View 1: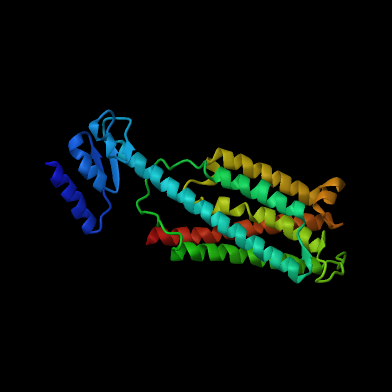
View 2 (view 1 turned 45 degrees about the vertical axis):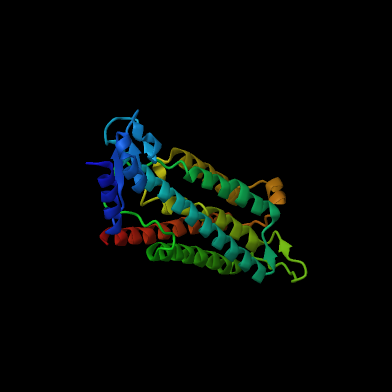
Length: 289
């Protein structure tokens, strides 16, 4: 086939709504490679100047590899975007609840959340490997997808409900003491801010688990698995056994009841289980479409 006919065929496929991939092994394929959505040149050929990708082998085995890697990159991008969106909303809601009680999280607590927890999860999400097989259905490329937005909405509703429930449950405890404060001077180091902090540092790890189930599960990402294990150990230590000097730095006002501290872990675990079950429903719905 002449070069102009190859290009014409690619353009015709575009007009009828197809996305095209062209594999070339010579300079006569350059026009079609340039016109295609994905152009792949075989190794050591003249088509390399016009192609988007260069194959290490002289056959078309690289096509499913590129498709797989491309979908993985898209999935990682959307997962990181959803994680960032969830973090922003959960942090805003937590701080709003604190302001309504005339309290606020301390600077040390925000530093731990922003620099240690959120940044490390963002980095490790990028280490997800691609799947060994290609899914039969293509993932939506738009973040503003109805199913995806509704999934994230349900995730946030569950997390916010647990936060609100924790505040009301805390105030029902016989050892709870309300610290008087005013709008002119918000108080750091209250019981409300302490236990909202203990809850939210667990909640912020949940998107890394929930939103990777449909692509490559978190247990196959070694770096993320190690990070989550370290974060959960540190978070549990802060909740259950934090030393007095740590309490002073973070301005914690801890409960005298060890059972209540254990219940914070149970709150977080129940929160995660519900989020996973809700996301499984959405995954099942998308697979049937």
